[in-house]
Amino acid sequence: MQPFTIHSKDFQPNTSIPIRHTCSGVDESPALTWNEPPPGTESFTLICDDPDAPRAEPWVHWVIFRIPANVRGLPQNVAKHEELPDGSRQGKNDFGKVGYGGPCPPVGHGPHRYFFRLYALDTLPDLAAGCTKAELLAAIDDHILAETQLVGTFERA
Image 1 (cartoon, one colour):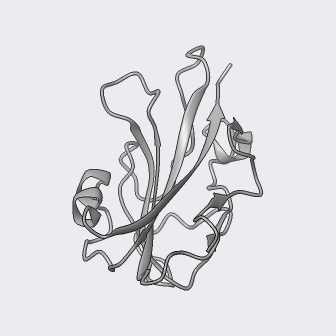
Image 2 (cartoon, helix red, strand yellow; image 1 turned 90 degrees about the vertical axis):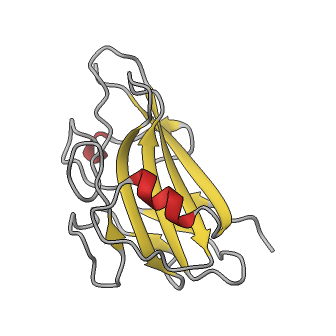
């Protein structure tokens, strides 16, 4: 079985995230795809955060969970709704909004790294839309079958 991996047609690993996916552009989520997960996968969770934010905790940009097990990606510009037609739910980011909030580091702060972490779970997390990253991580703690990540960078001049 191949390793569980995540990719984007919008940027390569460890390269700059295009402006359209940041606060300097239209702030739409990038397209993401992943391969076959481990047997027993019931759902996926994706969390995007910035560990280089000038504060103690990483800045949370996106929390999306209950992604159905038969899904192998997210399209570009996922709607910023609490619940999506396929049953996926979105949590609250650190901008105080539901859905994706793109990279927006302080001007002149240097490049930041953005980790898109995908988790294959053996459960369907029973959390309401609008939950936080911390609440979601606590709920999935003992249910992670596999984890993969894609890292992009961004710097505001």
